[in-house]
Image (spheres, rainbow, N blue to C red):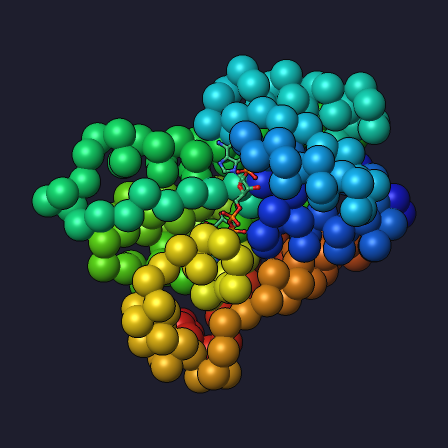
Length: 240
Ligand SMILES: NC(=O)c1ccc[n+]([C@@H]2O[C@H](COP(=O)([O-])OP(=O)(O)OC[C@H]3O[C@@H](n4cnc5c(N)ncnc54)[C@H](OP(=O)(O)O)[C@@H]3O)[C@@H](O)[C@H]2O)c1
């Protein structure tokens, strides 16, 4: 069945691949983004997918954004919390601003978006929520106490919300990507990246489409028995 989906950070990187894959699966997609108008405009022209600009770290902006999408496309059935940022630094050099920005954007956004959409999902007894976590939320990472804490929280949030939605047709799952060849990872210094790739059993970075494939699977109508799970898509880099 065609559903209405919002993908946060859905105009670039992994999110763009998720938006396109959900559209290809027959869904009506709204791709949110935070500030890069140029990338969003290019994405909109290339894909025909509607784009919506708002800051997912703002509770009010998410409330208004979800309401606007519902008005334009219909009640929201699928939320993919994908928007994320890094502000790396070792703890002894990390500012409070770096901490807050990463926590607000990576996990605060999950609350903001789900809170905005949950009443309608509960009324209609259907919802698919997919939160994009990270291998670094599972395993930790040097220089990323903020990011690892936020992504680890994404996984806890997922399991708790899954319990709340299970009896009323709302599933909530997470995907924990390994290293994917997006701009976020291209920003990692080359020598560091080479060391990272050497530790990936599959022997390469992942592709955004490989994460999108997992999202489409978890959002399907017939995925109703899968909830509270974390799907690791990381080339075998971390297993537990
Ligand atoms: N790449 C990896 O290897 C990797 C690995 C594990 C997990 N992840 C996670 O996967 C997700 C996507 O990563 P990516 O590599 O595709 O990142 P990316 O290429 O940097 O894209 C990030 C997207 O998030 C949006 N965004 C950032 N802050 C926002 C805000 N406050 N409000 C609304 N949108 C905001 C950006 O919007 P603009 O275009 O407007 O800037 C952009 O569309 C993130 O949650 C990331 O932590 C990535």
